[in-house]
Image 1 (cartoon, rainbow, N blue to C red):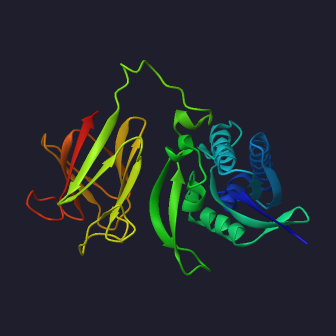
Image 2: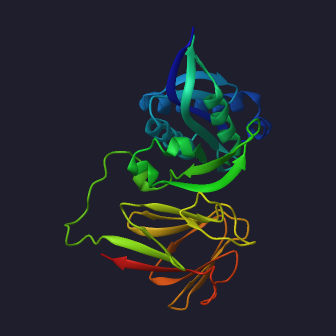
Length: 301
């Protein structure tokens, strides 16, 4: 009989291994892949993980916590992209990583269940150099890691009828090198508490340290619901990260931002910083009198 337990499951896959063999030849390519697997295993063990199996150029591992899985994933990405021996045609070998936290059945040093399949699907959704995960995983993360993930898409995964929200874990920033407790820099007088007021007609929401992110779109589950033909179900997110307010677009038609200082911006499937005050238009340029125009203002408390 297997044991029911909740774990984070991670898959790490070398990108373009066929090309590596074509460019380097069989012997050298096998050495490169073996080194990648060694680095993956080392990062897994360093962050309390267990390598369940290796399959060609891919590693499957489990971790007791979601933080452990992303710490290992970030370390894998850094070690492989910076290793001097992992260069092919002058470019670094790259990996893609997917992970998911949930219930699994642990049996004979292997794990089974829907969580494993979802983690594997996350890997197939990831691009070269990306770490992809799920909302269920994000819910388990520490505040430090939550500040380093961004929602980028909603997709229907193969074999699953329901839509799954996809998150990318940002590993390139210096703040992700170690998930130690955050350290306050400066005195309380030097650090200013910030909040962002978002107004749509009679609706108003505030983004600050107590409510660090909101979702905007036409679906009812959003924090700010806006109806319109050009507006996606989950159109954009606004979050506070390292004392900055970020607008993260994940829509089909993009998001327009006009600041009251005269700056005009457009973002689609990307992010930008919100500063000062202005108007936001989902899928179209904001108009001051339109009921679909969002007003925003960044305030010091």
